[in-house]
Amino acid sequence: MSQPDPLAVLTAPAVPVDRLRRRAIPIPAGLIATSRRQLGLVSREQCRLAGLPRGRLFRLLERGDWREVTRGVLLVQAEAVEVDDWPARARQRALVAALAGGPGTVLLGAAALAMHGIEGPALEYVPEFAKLAGGQARARPECRQRRLTRRPDVVGHPKTLTIDDVLVAGPLWAVAQTLPSLERRRAIAVVDSALYRRKLLRRDLPTLMAALAGVRNVLALRESLGLCDG
Image (tube, rainbow, N blue to C red; front, side, top):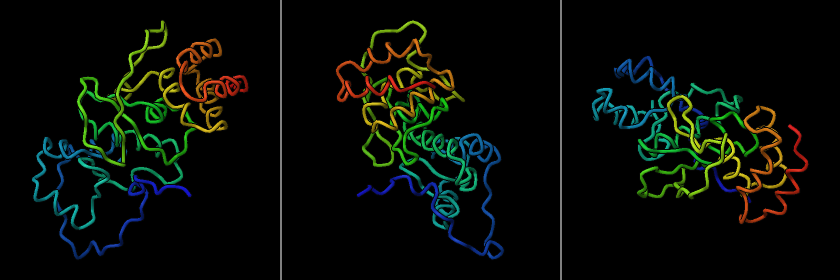
């Protein structure tokens, strides 16, 4: 039996309201611009920095105009991502983790893949992140914090990159972090997508296998990589 999606609030239908009978609550223009860049999301800290009073924020949440996605992260424009825009929906989930983690956060696994435009993981994935300076965030079901594992440097494969001001694991490392948790067909889809988008080249596959050394299902993954042609 499939588990409920902890981020279902992102696509939950809006509660119909009679907006003609409700007073508009002023929102700083800069905060609206920020939410557009972040696919409808803002953090509570961004609200504070934009000058939105706490009482006004509470009313927006109480009325249902805004939704709390996870602790400290708010959905302020539910219409920012179309339901059938799968790449944008995957990227929106990644941004939930980036905002929840705050400064010094690097996105890992499927969240990093989404930022790179690499497809394959299930759309209802739970985004993962790590803190570069260490420290443990409070546990929450909507996103997971992982510890960074020290890996030898690989020429041509940076461990982190910045995409739209978000720090993410490099493509090779994001693929390696994701594959062990995927069933075979999804693992093949991820590597094929990475090859198709030229985030990885076929000559990188042995390096990818070396990065997977010691993980569970490594033999099955090695067989799966032989089926990938981009």
